[in-house]
Length: 259
Image 1: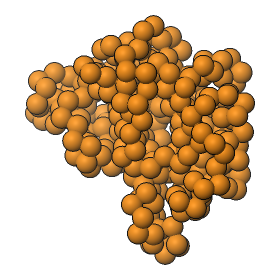
Image 2: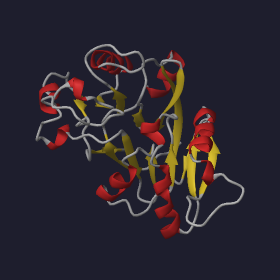
Image 3: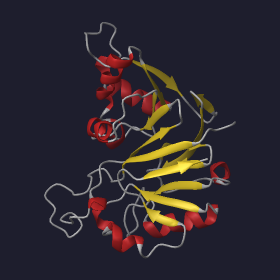
Image 4: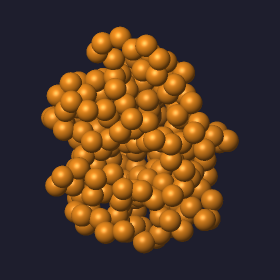
């Protein structure tokens, strides 16, 4: 499928607690470097005519204001954890200004979680002002949002199925610690890939930095960005200086162009 040139904005690059973490006085959380200030992980993907976000974090409202997103066509969800879906209620501002339901795409697991967490959205008798969404269940088949092609990529967050997404030559994966060979084949050929890299120590359900680096090298993607970062990883500038060529830590409001 043809994909137009895209601009990708990292709306947030932190793990579930964000950085700085509440009540923490470690050097990373006390850092004055703006690149060490990380909201929960999400991206904005834009063509000339279409704009979508991947995940609505607890920081969604501020992320949209900070990035000055005045038009939004769709929301894609990776999985049902709170740090990835808690901000869904704030899409009602787009309902108001765009005068139409928001298209929302999720797998069955996340779709069921949305109906539980936001039961009022799906109630038979709705009260005025609640979010208006058009919910679409997605699996492994590619589909289009406006002029942007979307290829779902199944990855594993321990035993939880999580969806990554490939948009043209750009692939985004968060909250994973395993990718099966058939799904790796969907990533290969990308020019840019984003992977979660939580910390240095091993984690039960996330790639650590060493594992993320090894995965990029296996996939042979020339340009890589690491996200879903905790304060345990270290300061942005210090860690970036240690990474192999072509790899870097993402940071909030970083923009990447893909064509």
